[in-house]
Image 1 (cartoon, helix red, strand yellow):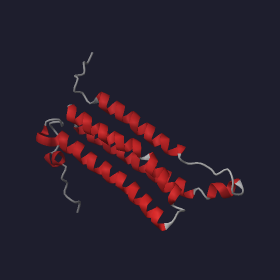
Image 2: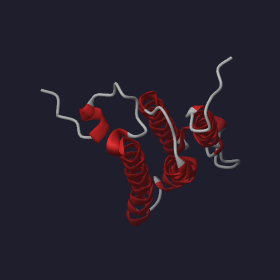
Image 3: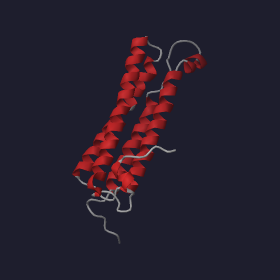
Image 4: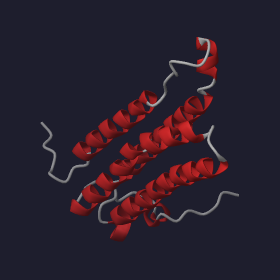
Length: 163
């Protein structure tokens, strides 16, 4: 029987997987059909912004989940700071359905409202990017939480551009 230490990443990863799954599922709740406004075909067709926002956000959350999984393949242990940063990441991931709804609703709005919705949506992903980087840099600092075999270039978070 293998006994996992208190610092094993298993619980953190399982909880994270659950939050990613719930966030990706909540996206579809924001897609609906107007009760008035013509035939069902017409009402379904006019909801294209919601479908587009759903597909884009689904893909982005899916990519985030894959990146999270890949990152934790290199992280061997956890500490309090890693848990806190991971919770911050999950906070923003669970928030994504809301700006997705706003974008879907405002694509038919005024130019100012569309711009505001786009900035709001984009800002959410800037926050995700910043927290993802902070999470990795925390784990890689001094190589204290990452697997010993992880290449040093990966442990700094700095990657050379492919040729």
